[in-house]
Length: 164
Image (cartoon, rainbow, N blue to C red; front, side, top):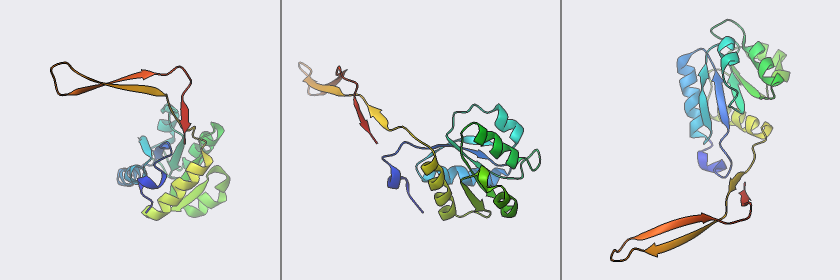
């Protein structure tokens, strides 16, 4: 399985799980975190997805949800908003008929390796801006009469440097 340090220089991908089975959602959340990305939570229905703030970059979507076989509608809704998804489903035949809605299809039961590949596809699809670090000047000063040091940070006037 790909570990977090394999893409540690990248910003974590914020992923939402759209899954009605709490055990599967729990497992997916842990796989996402183990890969160094961030699971923003899970919803169990298309209706709940529509109420969710769009503060995530990608989603893992099951086809059968708590409000019925609405995963296709969920994937279409996400695609219309520019959010890529991967199907994680036991109904791969249906997912394959609608492969234009997802960047990957993962058959249940999932493995860590198949999830790593699907999340890799999501990562390649999403444009994540590089992390910006402001330039800073660090000053160390000794306190009079004490043995400890204080570190002060002050921003420098330019815009900073970009690290990807």
